Length: 401
Length: 235
Image (cartoon, rainbow over all chains, first blue to last red; front, side, top):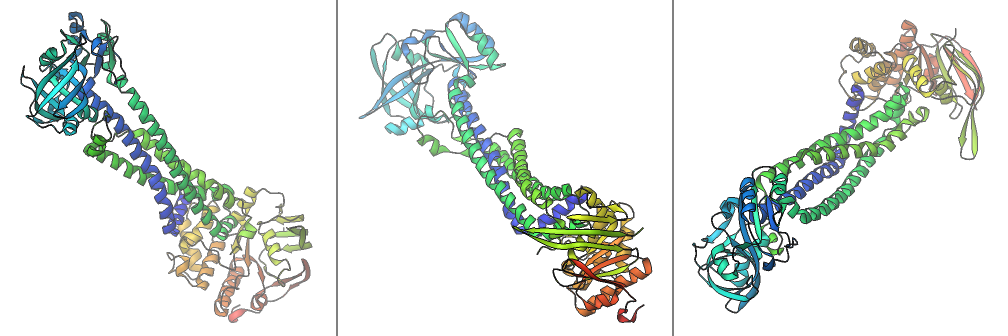
């Protein structure tokens, strides 16, 4: 076996340029799915991170009757956080209550639909650490009629720090209200959906604008323990709790489609690699008929002849696969540490709840699967040439040209 | 016990819808220590006889015995094992494995014959016996035609086979190298009692033979044993 492997290895170096070209397809065929898988996993992480750090925390509670589609934000469904729920939330971890409301933002002749967030200045930062949020200007002073605009929204209406804007919104009782606010800051939360259409006012100011009487539409929790267990614990009392994974399930399901598309493309690339290997081994088998005949004349068994060609294909798959795995894994680890910045692309994509930087995710499974698949393709592609060589008639083969 | 024997051997090759009768009932016995040439024009059946005796092919009918063992009904694996252990081959085009050195090409025959001990000493001796003591680590492409054929002879002899089959061994060599190779084989036949069976067109080879079997159209027309004329004056 060792001798066969040595012979196979030397044969691979015999026509080095051909082996190299074939190996390159295998390298790509193995490296691409690892990179692609890392990227799709990174998309999942990106969506979860964007939601966790700006909208939901680990757990998001809404009043039972409140829609969960992320499109409608009916103020009429807002509820008071009862002392009983507050006690449960205190036990679960840090939490903050917000009111999300549809509004119209007017600056001079410009008017746009926007999504308002009335937040608790004391607790909001405990669930949504703002150290990575970039703000130009400042957060509203306590009790001041000030607003912070999302970066995309500010750009849309050409608002700057210090400008005045009018916020029009329907109050909880159902009347229309409009107040003038000074723009205290322009924020980039790194959630494109929020930055493109969101603005923030303090709860106290929100009470005046919306006449909520202590009602809230969302409670976000940064749970101490397992979010699923905590969600089960804080649910009830007229509020429905969902983990961030459940909140982002639709987007993650959409990513599954990307995964399938990726697998399809990878399948095609590996098929091309397989055809390349088959071609290389077939060429080798046709070119070396006399050599095979000689080996048979010297007593090499058919199985060993087939094994020699299988080892050549497998050797190519093994080495090129290892190289592909190394390139793919190195790429994933590099982009996991440094991220890929998609800033403008994400901003221009509209209200997509995702961050501007994608951090690839390293996992062993795609590495092992890609490598095994590449190796498998190499062996399968070598089967026919190996069979052809093993079935040569030695009497004819020793005299072949 | 004769070394090998053909009994009323016929060999037919299908050629599309036609059949070509390569051997028409050949009877031939090769004794140990012989230095025999199978001679004849192209298409006379020389190579077919060598293939059958060398266990590379099976007869259509008749019996082929190697050391009294009938080979016609042996399976591929059994035939392969028999070739590896008992038969050495020397080919017209040398048929060395280009990716292996001279040493490795010779060692290959030992490995395939199942020898795994003392290989180094045996291979070195075999190469020195054919005058290639300085070229162990050269690949075939770095050797002349004559040197390549010497490696092939060493490869055939290193496993101490019962029979060495040489298919036109001098055809691709110039006369000087051809004579030297032939003399080498004669010496091994005389000194070590190795049995050689050749096919050839070469008059010089036929002159060296102790026995010449002539084939025409798949049948033996002459079988002469005689004293050889030694090449280069060696005896």
